[in-house]
Amino acid sequence: MRRKKINPREPAVDILGSVSRRNRRRRLGLAQATGAAFLCLLLTPACRPPEARRASVETLAKGEEIYSMACAQCHYDGLAGSMHPALRGSPILSGDPENTIAIILHGQSGRSVVDGKLLKGIMPAQAYLTDDEISIVVTYIRSEFAGIPAEVPPALVRQVRETPKR
Image (cartoon, rainbow, N blue to C red):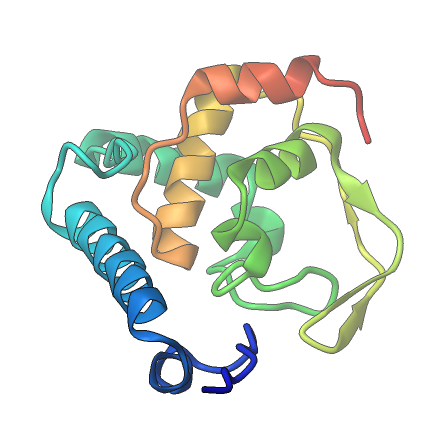
């Protein structure tokens, strides 16, 4: 009997029909193990990575206060203006919080294209804010404009502050 060559790029269903009985058993075992691992991640809290701590109402209220004092002069309600990008729905805010922290600490200038719009603004550094204030305001803006309610710890701000500017 002539065996067919197995193409690893074929979908698993097609492969299962073209391999020997012994190999089929092995592949089903792998599929079952993958399924079990997936279910474990979904259903068992012990298997899931620890979730970030949700921001408290007090933290968000304090963050709104800091935002109105240090950020709202340019960013207003988070929508795009003529010289500043929109915070609402921003990929920077929904990404790694370290990027947002770095922009707040070190500022940003020059040309940048955001949502297909060329901006030539300057965001001054806000390094005068304490680590606690920056962590609170980043928690607030990520919650308010990106829908991420996770608290950003002051230790992360401290780490970014101590890292040389990129």
